[in-house]
Image (tube, rainbow, N blue to C red; front, side, top):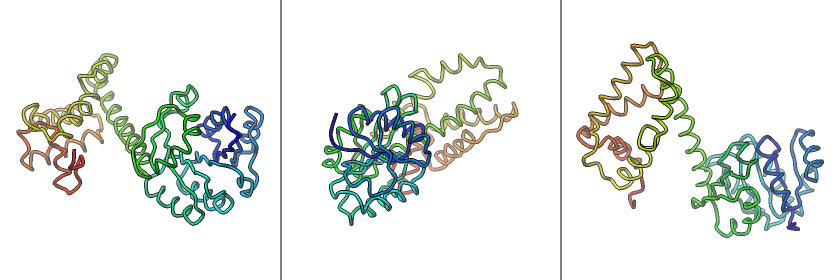
Length: 297
């Protein structure tokens, strides 16, 4: 048992599991507005309840796992004056880089460091020990907090400066949530058209087909390397997208994501990229002054 003390703020579904995992290796104190959760943590893994900010004066690390960035900031404002100057804050909540910067500004006058360690997992994955942490911040602070990070999740990806781990989590979730809408639309189209759903799932999950190919080939190879020669022309992809929209219309299926995405293919053709591989839609973001990949790639 590491003698350094860790305070965990937030005992929701994910936070409770985080606190439990940390408690296997450290002395843990916990705070949550739900007194039942605090009592349960005391009973199940010996956590000490935090009743007032002054109680965190001896902790070496503070782990935040809270519902909103505003709550994280409120907690930091409350406890920062009471923490030792070398205490490290580990933000595991889902926040944006701007929120990390705000937190850092609150902590700086007190000589406190913060790192982002965004949790990429569901509750079941955290319970099973298969969660991942997306890290951002000072390498020195991360190294100091490594034992705590390891206690939460062994798999970790370091992205760079403060806020980059948080940004990666938000982007990952944005993709997952957008794909969920596309998949729901696809399932509705398939049902209306009499397509076997199980076979459709198999088709879309094939590594050479629907969900994988745009990322693992078209983005990873073509967009990253700026290679748009050959391949499936953007004009052909636009035609296929148009057919999908017409299929949905003929079956009375409302489209939101797929309909919106079709507009991008129209813009790509209008911009003169019609004969290039359809990954060339990424060039539109370059045209708008927001490159799809760094210029050094």
